[in-house]
Image (cartoon, rainbow, N blue to C red; front, side):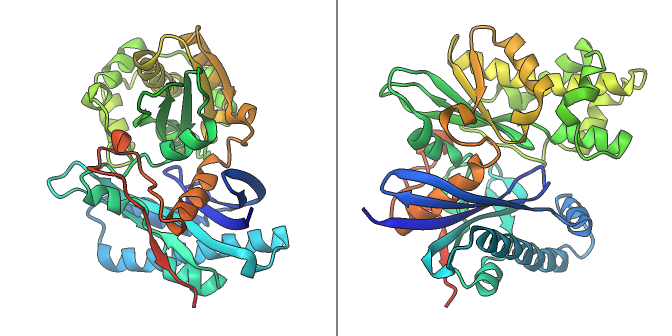
Length: 370
């Protein structure tokens, strides 16, 4: 059985760094060999945040410059990972790069999604072939282009006879329902994950995130504000559906809290955390009254979030994907190494029942180093 090595690169909506993973594939078996996280420099983070807001001055030049800069950062992450793992680059089949999403608008009349991080730059600076642009084929086929990880979740975590939900909590939260039988896998973005709680604590305390949910735990949720936010039309949409910073952002947060200036700042943080937890729990209960729930992404390390989820889902067994053999921090990075291998093997990477695409498709494009 041949052994192949792939690298996966992931930078999500939280924009807190580039995760790079080295994965060994032996047939259907995969092994995580090594990992590296490359922090996002503050000037690049502020530039990306500016670009994510439409109407920026000189937007096209800004986009082009950041596309190259993010590509250079991704290449730096790869080279650091290769050095750390002490592996010959010649043994690495390809890099699967998600890129950095700066706009996700699949529901327009001419829907689109845009990830930057020039794959040509990555290939040139690493001397490794790059496979990138995974989402736009699915969009071209009428899909949402997201979420793509449910196909990987199905192969890695499904178990016959067990109802399982894989919950990825990054900036946005997405769910994969693995029914444990011949039924179709269900997956969708269910709403804000860490994005609003990170935005609020950054605005008030100039901290990048609420460590372990401690600030939220010190507050008291305001039911009126929570119900107002949960009444947003996105939460009642049927799947397939996907979302991002285009909807759940600082402007939306300011609009939602405009009439709640009397609340303590910690109470707003608590309410925002409950928005994440309630929207997740509501969707889980629509899928199954009782199931196993495995959490990955940054939210897996927020104990207050997990505690609140457990309270809302008393008949669920809740754990992280570590219980299934994959560290929750690296699941998405591994998924993009897997998608790169799917491309090389000419195998589809999407699930039309999840994204809404008209058919299965091989996702991505090749950007050779040579």
